Length: 418
Image (tube, rainbow, N blue to C red):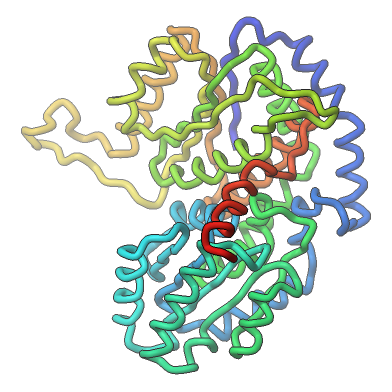
């Protein structure tokens, strides 16, 4: 993985190093927890997937569901975004993924019709994921979906259904009573940090992706060569925060990374966007995470390159060595591009954008995946999880709660008399 920076001139080495020093104790604490295998801290998310039992369960699941051609994931936020991010990059079309996150009658009707078209129940796998077991959107979608599929396949649909959540929730108890498969996640790990728990690994296994390689990359993020890069990046983000930069733009230059950007947007916003710090001090500034793709070069690109908003751009991309297409020589429509491959054109566009940012003195970070995609995704996501924890530590905010999100949930349940 290659990472480079082009900084605002006010971002000095002294400021970066000062923030890195603030992380010393926390970095040592996480390293000690990982070595000891501590399971009672939220940072357990960084090394939970080392557990041997987890690998055995996934191997058994893979054999049991080997005929699946359509996976339906029912979940929202941390229960779905990580899986969608990985699948959007690795998808070969071999297994179809449908996601039911928010509540939409039109969407669930379309998914039901698509699933029923599979004919055989053995080709279907349904994952119902809710950490708390009480997420309104998930409960509503799961109830309608499973009732509809039960009418077609009978009780056999529950043999193809997996419930995932905290131990002992009413949702898991219900699933077990129906004969569904039950997997738990560590209660100490928050939803947005759960991509390398059963929340992400079970559906990844069902979709046929290389879970072992993903986990290898994920765990390698704890090695000194990568962990030190994370500390430096976190220190930089904290400097930009202090300089009152308002936007953090995840620019997925390879469009298949757009969902990764949406996963990161949730991670960044929920972990760092707090009303008060750990000392109870009211916070009056926050960086708003956004997501862009090359399409935005013809829309919001004008705004960003004008330099009007205080924006840090986070370019993320990779060269696809497996899929490429050449523009035929003699093609009169694209005569000037004859002989170039699409990858070469994309690389030129990337170079042009980066060059423009440098000329306009717009700060950015650039990350290019260099290893295999499953490994790179595991490495990248684990590095970003750790990075957000580090930024939160420097800013003195709680990286693991989301008190303001709970308000809409409470109001919704009041309206529905739940």
